[in-house]
Image (cartoon, rainbow, N blue to C red):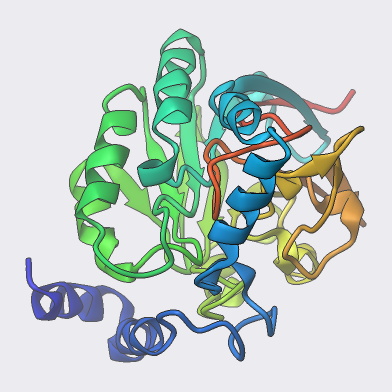
Length: 314
């Protein structure tokens, strides 16, 4: 499909403003280091940043170790208890994959696919940043995601991250990934429902609309918001979501001993930068991601795939 064909498809679904605005920002931001999104400074768009980091790691003899670390994906099990969860969904399990960055994380993706094949879950959610670069071609991205999708079982949902172009949406949906762009869906069991809302990227593009995503979700029903970034935690909580699943931060990716991140490249409390957390009555989880960004290394922050086990609070 040409860009115009993709735009036509997306305009029918999202309306002309969302699709065209997203594409215009994508065109404008190539190699942009300053001036867009929640963060004014965008380290990952700085052309020489990866070269400088690699040079330092090579000089200190840590580069090869970092590459090995980045390939050792682990499974994280996260138990979530809520009194609002319908009893029929007790034991419901969600597989979360985040920040695949497939072009620059081949070893990690290979390991993740193997782990996914051994895992048991009911649905899968992809919380953005499938692409390695922040702009440019995306055919290789779709091919990499297709390899992951081939190993997934059951319904699969996704949202776009700040590395992803909206032009990827038709290709992702063609392989069976239901992309949620300020939209919602639900899963039904025995007349009860579990609602799932998803938003477009809030970190860089600012194309999120939580109110729209929540508009078709009854206020008293258990609902989950999937967002690339956890930076929308306040809006998600005030919109009545019970659970927020996100990624983006990579947990810091290059961390000090003890998993202390040097930077999270996000505007949020550090306690929300990785793993489980809570904000008022809303439960949250920030995945440290499966892939790596800027440089293909990790230190004191193993890549992960996450299994969220939902249970009714006793």
